[in-house]
Amino acid sequence: MSQHTDMTSDTATSSHADTVILTRDLCWQWPGQAARLRFPDITLPPGEHLFIRGASGTGKSTLLSLLSGMNRSMTGTLTVHGQELTQLSGGARDRLRADRIGVIFQQFNLVPYLDTLGNVLLPCHLSAHRRHQAGDSPPAAARRLLAALGLPEECLGRKPARLSTGQQQRVAAARALIGSPDLILADEPTSALDTLNRDRFVRLLLDQAANSGSSVVFVSHDPALAGHFERHLELTPTMGDQP
Ligand SMILES: Nc1ncnc2c1ncn2[C@@H]1O[C@H](COP(=O)(O)OP(=O)(O)OP(=O)(O)O)[C@@H](O)[C@H]1O
Image (tube, rainbow, N blue to C red; front, side, top):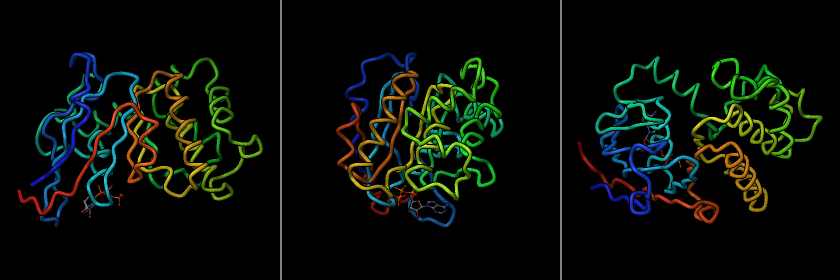
């Protein structure tokens, strides 16, 4: 049986109409896997920061793939920015993600042939909404974000292969933040960093998200990061839960 601890619903104070994420009874089964992943319900109001913790294999990345619309939940309901993702086509979910969601992947997924500025500006090329939100000069907005995240100026023209892991992480964060998306999803982006840099990065990310009013869902196996977040959710192993 699935045993999750849901602390978001308990602390939710807003109505369901006033949410960035609202999920009920989500589950997913990967092809070839006997166990079905069942996820606790989430109610996340605009501008709030949710920390999702769980050991390796408990389904953190899978849950983010459902929240971002990359995969479609097999059951239940999932509303992001008022749109029911389980009812949308793959193309419509891609559109919603481009316009409303910034994703920081575990391995950053920077485009190797683009330099730092090119990578950060990518969402503005994929979405007119994000371009509009980035203001009169998206390149200037990108530079401001990168400076706020502590990336040295000399890195702006470099491709990802010539950046350190911590620098790549800042580029990935700026790419997620540009154009002030309603929601930022971050998948263990700090796993390669030491404790001091990890805490600094999380603080910078959350401060920038707060500046733009973006909600954040941050997943990690590391409980030490929980103190940076006002909302918490724990995923626990499914213990052989069968369909
Ligand atoms: N593409 C896939 N095909 C088949 N099974 C998968 C796939 N991706 C993940 N799984 C399985 O789904 C379960 C949850 O994986 P997931 O990557 O979501 O966990 P996680 O909590 O993010 O793990 P980690 O902390 O190690 O990144 C695991 O049992 C994993 O083996």
